[in-house]
Image (cartoon, rainbow, N blue to C red):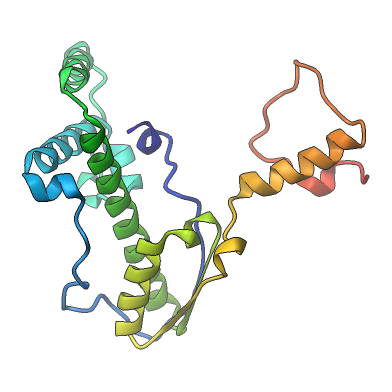
Length: 208
């Protein structure tokens, strides 16, 4: 769940445009294949739901960021009692047996939550902007489940969605790595005292 804490919701650059009034289709999306462990029982689903509900109650700001707007306006409890309760909750989670199957199911549930949020935001963008074309780019565009959901729901609105070929769905980290390799090959490097920068445009560096 650490990926949730740091907001790594799969970097997506959504350039949207859609028809006026485009909303979610009333019919449910096509059936999705459930993980093998989920078919075997409801234990993992119960664990997932309990964990996420408790986590979002403890971190409502993060819940809102993840698209759970029922937590709007709620603040985390930083009192001594609130912190003690959170510690006890994390200890209880840690003591649960997380088998490989359960871990896979939790990862599946996280993907479902991320896809649900991105689809909702994309449809909202189509509705607000009044255009009828959606372009998905970045590493998230390689997720086949997201592609299927977006294609179904955007198509139901009468709009169109486009994706790059899989080999062009790259994360920003790949671009930065290539830029770093070229500068290292050119003899440029920094010492151990380098400062972390949240933003560092490549055009701010000396050309090679």
